[in-house]
Image (cartoon, rainbow, N blue to C red; front, top):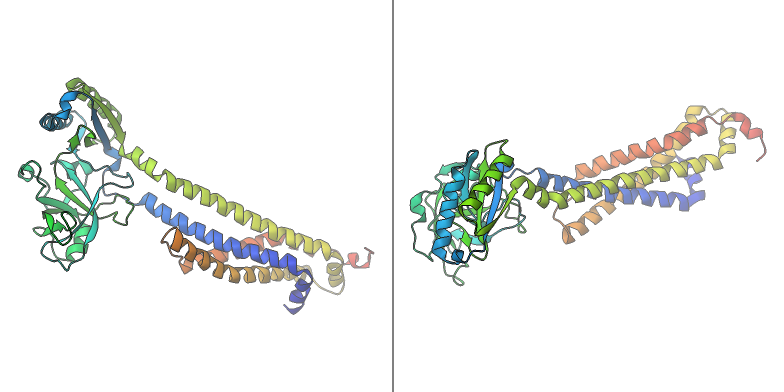
Length: 407
């Protein structure tokens, strides 16, 4: 190792640059892979719903009679009956919940009577009786909505709710949440509990991406959803394989029943694909960066080694004339590469965690795991050796007769 290191000192700038390139490559590649893994976890995270067979629909009224609240409510009920009677429809609900929209409606809740308890941020949505059959999210404990749940005065809030298992765990630990009461403490002033909900049911799985980390927390309350300004909104679950024909029939029958509105229909799959397009772009772009960076680093190592071989052809011939075997020459250049790569990777570890600290504090909260860094180091070692082998093999083929020629 001593002669190799002393020989490298004659070309400090060259080797320092390639060491820095290897360090930056490790830092950027591992952090890019870390981001890709996090985005893939988001892309593959199950919602807990029958996404492939659900369609979202909005009815945008323009006829003046829809301005009357009673007319709007009766129209929503009529639409629910019409849709439910269409062959291929398994369930339908009026709701303001739109899966995979990347946001929605939220509130804060805590256990009623426990003013010292934690106030938790959660998503909150409203829907009619068929809500959970429509989502394909069965009730794990308790019950869903029944007709009596909708019997409350106009202008008042619903009195019962169904919540997700994740929210129940935060609020009540391992105790059963059914029958317990939660409140929205920020509803009518500081320190005043308002809008109490008695929990009547729990669903096991719920996932809807949100700006806050409340993706798995939800409160569902019984109420139809609709107004002249925003229209009425529905989720419809259809039989597998019947999406196209059933949605066409839904639009046809609803327009025939009442032509004073415009209908919008969109599958949950397309909403999900639109929401995830940004994540897919990040995965594609960072994958491209990784490929290009590793390729450029490999070319750098290949170029440096080739230049070293070209500059030292006569010295290689001399060593061969003095008895060095081809294997000795090959091992010399591989050892030289191993030293360069190792120094670069040691610097790269510090650069990797430094860059990750910057990303965590400014962009994301995904911390770097040491196994990922270890895998990155091994792969770059292999890439460095692979880039060194072709010029090193050429060096091992140098004839001892080269030493006797003048340059």
